[in-house]
Every structure is written in structure tokens, then in C-alpha cells.
Image (cartoon, rainbow, N blue to C red; front, side, top):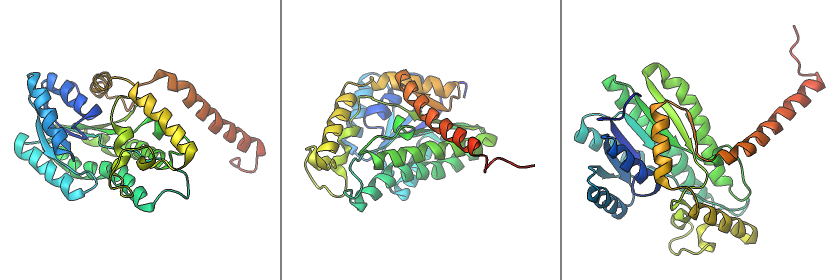
Amino acid sequence: MDSIENKVVFITGGGSGIGLALGRRLAERKAKVMLADLDLQRLDQAKKLLSGQGLVVETTYCDVADCESVKEAALETVDRFGKVHVLVNNAGVTLAGKPGEIPLNDWRWIVDINLMGVVYGVETFVPLIQAHGEGGHIINTASMAGHLAAPAMSPYNATKFAVVGYSETIKQDLEKDNIGVSVLCPAWVRTDIHNTGRNKPSVSFGNSLDKLGQQGDAASGLWKQVATAIENGLDPNLVAEWTIESLLENRFYIFTHPEMREMMAQRFHLLDTEFTTLEQDKRFLKRN
């Protein structure tokens, strides 16, 4: 995509964090922006904030875990702007805990939002982008947690690994339709994601670490470190600007923390070592 000016962009999780920052930066570049979120109060605050900065955006309710809600938000966007060019599947939550201690309803909750929310967005918006024949782009927000696993983070890691793999696949599927795909994989960014666990099904109220889904001292201690890293993370506006630059240059992987390269190299080394072991065993070598 050569320019974002006058392109219609739909952003989930647009009421705060990276979603809101993307809306701001895109509006500054003269894109037509629809911010979608489950939290109407946040949406209202976001619209007032951007309006106060002289920027024009529209907002709509959208529960990404509900396919019908995504469809309704898509139709509202088309009614308002006539078409959609860019889909940003940005809404997400986090959940931590140790195996054997995580309620299955909490698992379903994070999968429905972090994975199925992305799927619903793609399945709903791809036909709309294909219909106008002008091409477009999809940005799926994953995480470095979609490449690197951490203890006590299995639900989050599982969903983000899934988003990375899903994005790698649809990139190949949609290329012929002139629809680009990028997967945003940030590490620590100053957002509210570490507080989203307060909304999981097994908790109906409260905001303590115990009620955020961190069972046990080990998980709780790890979560405190995660929360501190997030609260001291990158400015979402910097991440948003880099994401838009990456979109315009059609980058697939969008990373934000160069220091993660060494950890990725360690992961690759582990994989490479196992392939070397396999080759040395010789039982699996291709025979002519």
C-alpha cells in the first residue's frame, strides 16, 4: 500500500493503547478511521480526545468474541464510509496461570478474544475488501509471546502463537487479491493489557493480582514483573507510527524491541540443534 490517505481503516480495541494510538496517527495521515471497542466509555473518551486535537474519527461498539457483533460493526463502517481498505485486529486480553489451575471458561474467554476475534475480523472483512477491487491490508496484533514462550503464560502464549501462524498462512492466501498481511509482535508497550484479566469469567469484580488470574506465588511474582515491564514500556504512539511505516512498506513481521533478537536466535539454535541431531541419526535421511 503506497498511501494511507483517504483509505478506510477499521481498528478493534480502538478505545485505548495501541489501537487508539493507531487511530490518532492514521487520522493525522488523512485516513478515514473507525475505532471499535467493547468499552463505550473508552470510545467516547477517545473520540473527545482526538477531536480536541483536531482529528476526525468515527466509533462503534464491537465485541470481537461475537461474530455477529463484528459483522454489525463492519456494516456500520461500510454505511459510514462506503468501503473498507485496512483491517486492524488489535483487541486482545491476557491471562496467566499454571497448568491444572486455569478454569476452562477462562481458556475459552481468551481464545474467543485473542484468536477467534482475529478470525471473525478476517472472515468478515476480507469479502468487503475483495468486493471493491482496490486492494487492502490486514494487521493482526500478536506479540513477542507469539514467538517466545514464558512460564505461567500458557493461555496468552497459545493464542499469540496461533495468531502468528494464522497470519503467516493468510498472507499466502490473500496475496493474489492484492491484500497484504502484517503481524504486529510487540514486547513491552504502555497499555492496559495486564489489567484485562479482571474481566475473565472466573472473576466478577476486583483488581488485585490474585483476581487477575495469577494462581500461586510463582505466577504472582512473574506477573508483577510483567506488569512493571508493561508500565515502563514503549509509548504506544511510537509503536503506532512504526506500524504504519511497516504497513506502507508491506512488511510482514512488525517487531518493536531489537533486544529480543538474541532470544529469537536462542530459539532458532534449539530448533537447528534438533535438526542436526536428526540428520546425524541418519534413519530419517531421504533415500533415492
